[in-house]
Length: 279
Image 1 (cartoon, rainbow, N blue to C red):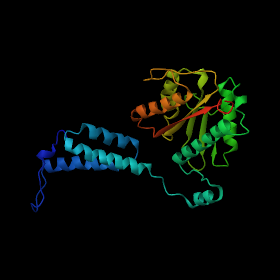
Image 2 (image 1 turned 90 degrees about the horizontal axis):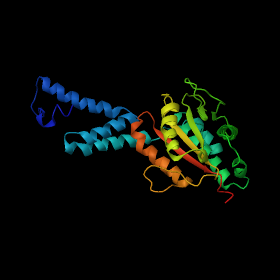
Image 3 (image 1 turned 180 degrees about the vertical axis):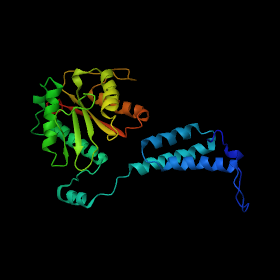
Image 4 (image 1 turned 135 degrees about the horizontal axis):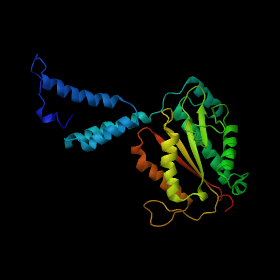
């Protein structure tokens, strides 16, 4: 619109008194209204659109102004919603709140998995050495699923063997209570996968398959390291990386491809190193 209805050709009606709008007046008004409508739409897709407009705008002086609107939108979308009275009571009693939407469930799922990671890597009663002997991802999934269910405290559920419409089965899928916004978590035994294949699974399996549902815009990629593999090949790296480098590279990869998945708000990569306690 700015390309074909140029700003420098606008009719200036300021201080001209009463007038009858002409075709040009309607055109430039429509151009501005389109931007205002786009700016009012919440979510990642409209943020990406504003960012692209800022890059391509024919008027270079307008680009910083539009980019400012894009950043302001990101800040507003990042604000959390006000807590419900029941959540305040929950937090007062148990230092935790019950999720009331998809985003809050995603955040709680991450906290549960990070607690699980900390217990295995640092806990005095860690059974990491036992889990190092697990050979099948299904066995690891069943154990992690059981641990997460035991610590649900009626804040979420994780059905066993949940099957999607295309017969695919996400490893773990968190469901909230009182709202419909599941959070999928994909689990991989890192020792059994090559670097390129893990990057492909992150994008095509987690992003492409399990987050196609418009109820879900956030997912978790969980890697468990058992100490069998010394390193992985990752994009844009001269040498093979260790497990920590693999997690960092996967996080960077998601940031690189994030703009290509406007329907996905966030992906979190969690690495669980079963060799930490023993070493």
